[in-house]
Structures are given as C-alpha cells and as structure tokens.
Image (cartoon, rainbow, N blue to C red):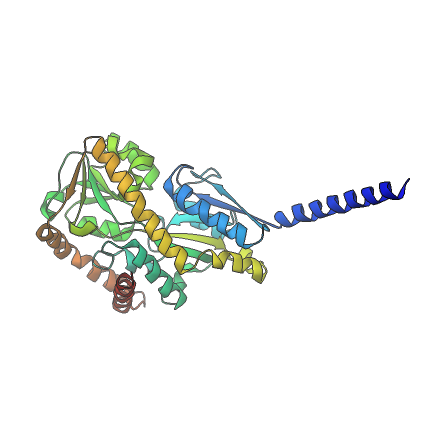
Length: 349
C-alpha cells in the first residue's frame, strides 16, 4: 500500500468518524410533541413548527422535535395534560380549559374585561406572571415552555344575529373553558363544553346554535359552512379569550443539561411571545375573510352595543374572584396585576 493510499484511507476513516459523531450528536435529544389540531392548522404551521425549528437550531442540531398532530398518538384533547405529566409524551400543546379548574390562577387572563383585544400584550402579561410566581403553582408536574392566548372569543351563530345580551338568551353555545361557560350563563344562554375538533359535527346536527371561538379556526374546521354570523365588539373587542400551553414533562426537563434547557428557553422568551400574539392576530384576517367570501355576515357591534356586553359580563369577573378566593387564591390581586401588565405591554407597542 502506497503512502498516498494509506493517507486517503486515513482521511476517509476520519470523515466517516466525523459523520458518525455528527449523526449521533443530531440524535442526542428527540422529543415528541402531541397536539390536537390538524397538521395544516396555522397553530402548527405558523407557531409550533417555527418554534420547534428554533429550539433545534439553538441546540446546534442536538435536539429533534417531532410534532404529532390531531391526537395521532391516541386519546382525546382533554387527556393531553395528563399525557405529558405521566411521561406518555415529552411535550404537548393544549388548551388549559380542556381540564376545567386545573389552572385556576391562569384563568385570570381569559376573563372579559381583563382580556379585551390584544393577544400580544396578554401573552407578555402571562410571561410576567409566570416568571414572578403569580401563576406558577398551576403547573405542577410540567415545565412550561410558553403560555399564550388566541385573538379572543368571537361569537359564531347558525341562525341568529346577536347584537344585544338579550339576543343570546336561550341559545346553546359551545365553549372550551369554564370562564367561557360563565360568560354564556351571564348572557342567559346554555354552555356546551367540547374540544374544538368536535364543533363542526355539533353545529351540523344542531347540538349547539353557535360557538365562542376566534376567526383563526374558521378555515381549519370549515366553520363558514356551518354558521351564518360572526360577531365581535367595537375595536375587535372579544368575549374573553382562551389560554394555551406548550409544556414538557417535568422529569424529562430536569434530566436535560443546562445548554439544552437554554435552547428551549431562548426560543420561548418575550420576543417569541410577542410574535405569537402577532401570528394569531394575523390568522384572524384570513379566517374572517373566508367567512365573508362564503356569504356570511361579519357583525361589528357599535361602541354602545359593546358596552352593553361589557356591563353584562362584569359579574363573570366577580364570580371568578369569589370562586378562586374560596380556594385561598388572591383573585382580586390577580385581576389587578393582569390588567396592569396588559396595559403596560399595550402601551409599549
């Protein structure tokens, strides 16, 4: 064997060893993220996938996040939080309200009159309150990657145009959260709880007369085909909102080295939460335009009509404060802090 041949073989062996080391490094940490909407939903394509790629890039290729949409790993959406707490999956994206009462402190951000119309400011308020410990006790058993809200509950109805609180009386309305159920009850309507993937068939069968959901979900579930009216208040005022979380199994998190934890943290900070707010606001315009193009009526209430709903729903805040105070939680203090944080972040924009 010539010197040149030996050198070539040595270089080839070194290259193979390097490729092997790189491959092993790329597979150091693989995570399964389970979520309840389809793979083409904006929540996955515009939020979860970019976040996952950011974590992977931050880790230098040592992390791989595999996203499993539409409950493809089994179970129903309300089971997601227990799946991640029990270690069945590593990460979940889920709606807090699918397990009513499990995240009582965080519910403050969902309340009408606390959340008005600004998902960006609400996301940053959630970040502040989690970091300060005000809502941290809600998340035993998981490590929160980030919390966020959607652009707010718009009212979608099948047959009735709702312009006053009295117009909603007697309707059966879908809701994902217990705070949303209290909103419906305050309007004299009947709440029907269900995960959002079950909504289209429920509208078709007349199980519900409408729903509180954002415009964002219209295309994914073809809500424009099941409803006639999309209703919101002046200046995009909404009937409260819904809180979501991306969380990791606590034991899995605790077992990660600091640099890998930093890869997740760096992808999940205030800049990202502000961007998430913009993402959800942006998807609203596409959704409502689809409904309009399908012949639906988009109703924007006047300021006076909006104020009538604000007044009708103020007792929801009082009900929540009384309910959580009975559990030893400073409900009034949380309302004050949440409103102040939202105001601060709204003014900063």
